[in-house]
Image (cartoon, rainbow, N blue to C red):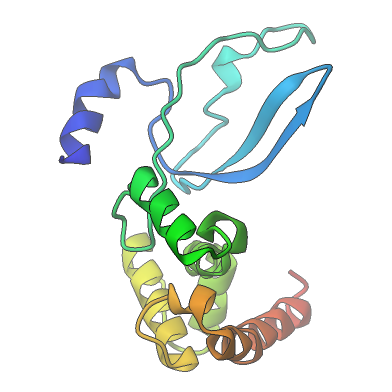
Amino acid sequence: MDLTEVFEKLVPYSAFAGEVMLAGADWSHNSGHSAKFFFSDTDLDANPMAEFTVRRGKRAGTRFHMILIEIQDDEEPVNQDQRKKLEQATDTEPTGKTGKRRQAGMLCRSPEFHGYLRSLGYIKDTHSESFRESIAKEFVLRVVGIKSRKELDTEPEAWIRYQNEVMRPFNRYLRANGI
């Protein structure tokens, strides 16, 4: 199955097409299920949902049909049936709850992290956004000593190295620059 072909056919019907990250989910007896998403597309000039909200302070009420496909760091879709079977077979915590590799993936897309890498001389202003992300990913893999960000979820030592060798210096950079 080629997801690109499916997406291309749906684009004329799309209110928004792009990657989002689940920021939180909730359920209550009063309001039912709700989910909050962050739009990770840095090319957005404006709020992609602004035209769908009801004007004059009324609640938004535009209805949408959503199909959410979880994607891995390598941009491959996750087969949810296989993932659930694997989790049941190994009796481990679902990867969706650990999210360490996702955190590292988001960091690699972060303009602030790109600024940090620029200060270290790894990224230049002339590099494209996708190239910056690739450099950031390679930086994390090399500094932590892993071959894939997936290892952050499976190897506690790798997670500790990630925190000590990547996040601590990055957080120092943020504080020093008032970010």
